[in-house]
Image (cartoon, rainbow, N blue to C red; front, side, top):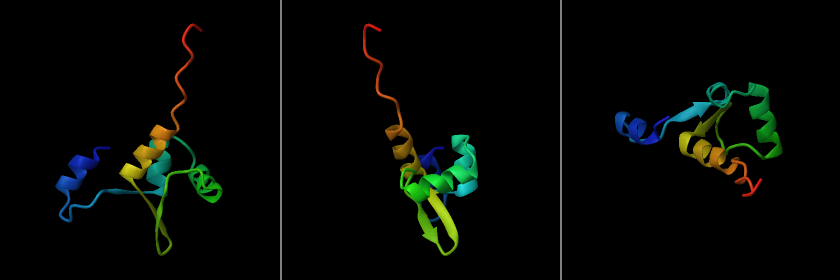
Length: 76
């Protein structure tokens, strides 16, 4: 997922958006998990366009980075 490249390549200069199934496939989780995260307010920020739910690539990247485990303690 290269947001910089995709932004340059599209005619509008907008960041690409992922739908729920694309996000689920990228993260390797069921679609129902994405909806559950959204309901609980723990998943990546999303945009609602009518009945369509979309996620910006940059928001997904930020959220993924926030999920990283803390560095293991040294000396273990």
